[in-house]
Amino acid sequence: MTIRVWDYLLEYENERDDILDAVDSVFRSGQLVFGASMRAFEEEFAAYHGVRHGIGVDNGTNAIKLALQALGIGPGDEVITVSNTAAPTVVAIDAVGATAVFVDVHPDTYLMDTEQVAAAVTDRTRALLPVHLYGQCADLTALEPIAARHGLALLEDCAQAHGARHHGRVAGSTGDAAAFSFYPTKVLGAYGDGGAVLTRDDEVAARLRRLRYYGMADRYYVVQTPGHNSRLDEVHAEILRRKLRRLDGYVAARQAVARRYVEALADTELVLPVTAEGNTHVHYVYVVRHPQRDAILEALREQDIALNISYPWPVHTMSGFAHLGVARGSLPVTEALAEEIFSLPVYPSLPADQQDRVIEALRDALLKV
Ligand SMILES: *Cc1c(COP(=O)(O)O)cnc(C)c1O
Image 1 (cartoon, rainbow, N blue to C red):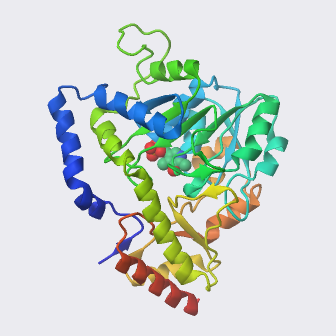
Image 2: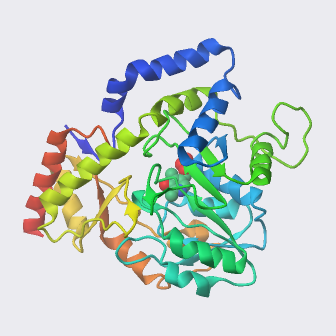
Image 3: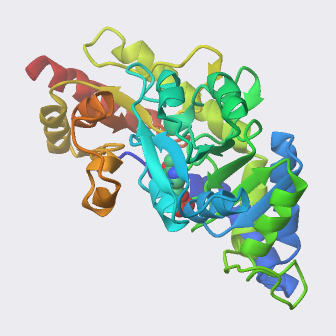
């Protein structure tokens, strides 16, 4: 049996009654889009984070895009972010006509190197977009004063960090806005696409509600501002409501899997994930590092273990971002990482025997490379 880095089928088996009940309750409600489940989820998701407004949207990319627009960011503006991220972070910056400006990442945590941020600020910079990559927060404590000093918006990309904490503050509760994805693999995942934006700001929230609904205020039929259709549908909202109640349990299960890797692999040459001081890591992806990465992955493939790399190509090296004009060699930590990292399975329902097989195969491969 092939071991994959992520699989939802066991979780579905465990939660099937609740998931099917969620689907059935929506189908029987008479309202498939823009109904009670979306509104309830928005409130419950915002309450979980202690933030005033939650706005459900159709996916995480649009969550970032609409948040940027609602914060007033558009053509001619610069947004400081990282190249070591899932491409959608930068796709969204591009989509509003703004320009992504990259800083390198920290060599231990692989997160935004906040010491490089101040030097990247120009008179066109309008926002900081840290990515809470792999399941832990970028250094928000360092970013907040930089944003305040230069009058920049702080937008958190929380697509990989549901439930993560930074000095006690839950991811998504610090910035002017925070964008979440509920893509199925995520720590809080739907059974399809979904996303949300959180914000404390009433005006930003009102703009977001119009932007995701043709430019109309909810329930009225007049376009008030330019908008689009980016709604979170009822089925996913209701499933997410049910799963939100289990979020802390999913996180605990991921942390238990991560602890087992530390116990079993700390004495090897693999570089294991480093949790930054003050952070609680939710282990969305368990990223390890080794100079012989490709040979190790090949050896694992022979054992029917199919792992992947998050991410093999830094965003600035992709042909689709050539227009940003960021040369190879300009982000040395990010570029070196991409050659050496790979991800171990860490999802909550990962069977213990599969984890044992991964550990055994890895230890075996490490003796041979
Ligand atoms: C998944 C992800 C996104 C995009 O979310 P989608 O729901 O797939 O559009 C954005 N940023 C990061 C860091 C992600 O991991």
